[in-house]
Each structure stands twice: as structure tokens, then as C-alpha cells.
Image 1: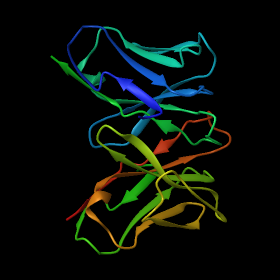
Image 2 (image 1 turned 30 degrees about the horizontal axis):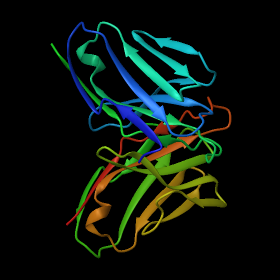
Image 3 (image 1 turned 90 degrees about the vertical axis):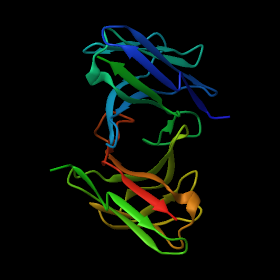
Image 4 (image 1 turned 180 degrees about the vertical axis):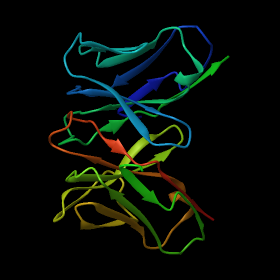
Amino acid sequence: SQELEQSPQSLIVQEGKNLTINCTSSKTLYGLYWYKQKYGEGLIFLMMLQKGGEEKSHEKITAKLDEKKQQSSLHITASQPSHAGIYLCGAKTRNNAGNMLTFGGGTRLMVKP
Amino acid sequence: DADVTQTPRNRITKTGKRIMLECSQTKGHDRMYWYRQDPGLGLRLIYYSFDVKDINKGEISDGYSVSRQAQAKFSLSLESAIPNQTALYFCATSDIGTVPGELFFGEGSRLTVL
């Protein structure tokens, strides 16, 4: 099994609806990072969470870190077609060094107009 | 122009051929990485380099080699390509001064091995 599990693997929502993506680690988290990938393009850094209970927001995207559960959630409020893409979580776990991250399998989001 | 540029963007080749994917960056970062992306498996690290004289294997380095020709250039080679190396390859950079864990990615090189 993977070190970082994302759920769901894919998601289709109607424009304007809220949604949540989860990322669960099998190892202790020393930093959790969210990236967005537009289809056929590279990854764009969204935000980083380091402390348990930490919550960060970027426009309509909010991410939280539950250190005890070794889990992070990404919540999008009032989704728009521009939110469509693949969301990946990356993490620093005990075996990582420097800026090397372990990534989850990604969540493919489609937003229907 | 992109800060991290990968060439080629798309390549179709045959089993046994030697392939080189190139990455160049204008960000002035010391650290460079090669990842591959497979559906459902996320990104897996192939090789990384923290400076010109430093090369390190990642979790899936078998079948690959790299060359750090300069601070700005990091090439990935497949000496004898095989079909299960069909994937989307990403080059990334980072620097000590950036947000820890913030990687800057190229747009990817899609490789198909027939």
C-alpha cells in the first residue's frame, strides 16, 4: 500500500458545490503540502501545513492538518470550473530529507458548469 | 517563458532505444529533481541533485541515469527504454531559501515506449 493515500481518487461536482479531498499518511507527518496539476501541465504549489491543527486558506481553498490522525483535508467552497484538475498531497515523512516529498496518488476533480 | 523547461514535451520511442530528457531552469536553484507520474501512483522520485557535484538515487532509480551538467541543467537518461517506463516525467527545482517542500515543476515530458 502507498505511504500517502488520497480519497477520493476522482470526483465530479456541480459548479457551486463544496467538496473535500482527504490525504492520509501511514507515517508521521513532518510537513504536508498540497499541489494542483492542470491537465497536461506541471504542478503548482498551493500551501504547506506543518503543525497539528493548522489551517490555511488560498482564495476558496482551505486545507487543514490533523497531526494525530496523520491526515490532511482540502476543502473547496463554491467550486468553479477553474478548480478542475488533479490535486496531489505531498509529505515529508521520517525517511525524507531536504525538500524531497512523497506524493499521494492524486484526486482528479471535474467541475460541471 | 517557463522557469523550468523540459524537452522534449512528448516522445514516442521503441523498446531498447536510448532516450534523454532534458531539464533547464532559470530560477537559480541549487536543487533539482526528476519524478515520474503514473496514473493512480502519484509522483515517484527517480533521482535528485542538491548541487552540481551531488547526485542521489530516489526510490525508483533502476533503469535510469542522470547528469547534472551545470547548476541550471539536469538530464535524465533511459539507456535502454522498456514499455513500463512509459510515463509522464517531471523535473522540479527547489532552493534552501524557498518554502520548505515547495517544488517548482516543469510542464512534464510524456514518454511512450512501444
